[in-house]
Image 1 (cartoon, rainbow over the protein chains, first blue to last red):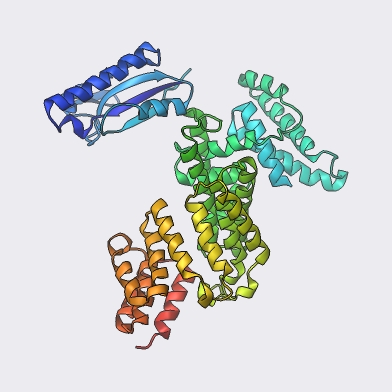
Image 2 (cartoon, chains in turn green, yellow):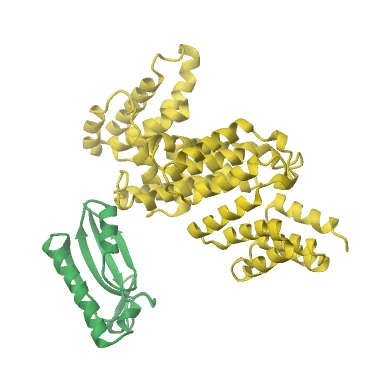
Length: 113
Length: 392
């Protein structure tokens, strides 16, 4: 089954020294590379910070452009990965292994036709 | 008999159909048909096989009408005539129902529906919630199992301890719902408590080497043994010290003691075994004054190392009160105000120790505070009694 892992930004991205952040980032990159090589990850991207987001609101023929992210949440999405694994347990253990010190990972199944 | 078979049949059908709703519905229809036909035609030689064949035929009819399920039809044709006698299927079912990706309310409802075979209206009545709410909860949970790909299997070894803990927790929640609440129908609650005990008993037959499952079984038996002594004819709570101990079910108590011993041989203590041991100490005392407080203090201290929740510490403080007196107990109780300030038993306990030290005005205030934090009718009645009894 395919799942999208939606990764939030964490406090670690604003705390600590440049070197500490660099080390964590390196671990994250290694995580992506190994799962990519193993064929588990189909697609993945890190997103620019939410202050770069633009939202287009569609309303029956008209549209408005807004200079902000979709959700003004503390837990902004910082990246995502599309994975292909056997079942939810496998997807959850993948999410649990994501090497960020704090933050959340939403695991959402993809509609497959 | 029906419940025993229904759980097993549902488990077998779910495995083959991969569809919770359909499996459950078909088993329910087969049982309904049996209830009409068996009294007329007589009970078949192999009731389980009869139910299985009927449920399977019903499923085939249904699936034929929905042609897109061709592959499921093929699976059904390969289904054996009898439900699996092995525990694996139902064990898979209970672990799926208690999967951590479902919230606890959903886990409880699914377990009662799919494993214990209760109807939605029975579950709704026991939990005093509208049937429509419960139906929605079940529908959402079953949909999530299929759509999110929650696997139908027992957990991997590395997840086993936490997953088993959750299954035991769900069963204990069901029991406590029946045991602690006094809202709703008394008969329905008593049945729910027995359902929880039955679930634990079958879990123990499937997992004979899990001491915590044995501990939970013992704990529930010890509570059930004192069930009728706990409420007076008016539905008011009778405290442990005032209960008529001659009405306690000694046979259940002995059975529970044997379970505790069996669990102890594994040398893997855990909170349910310790709680069971605590209740066993109470059950062993011929009267309140004969309670072995020193042993209880040891057990509560041990429990606190496994489950450091403030409620455990409150219970420990009560035992301290019996050994060292109310002044010593009050010091321990007062230390818990930060975490338990909104818990009625914290205030009720404080009230009784204040009363014992002669601080009646403060005791009265604490009882009033306790009243603010419970909506349970029987608990309120007990607190109101105290307030009217106490001297002004």
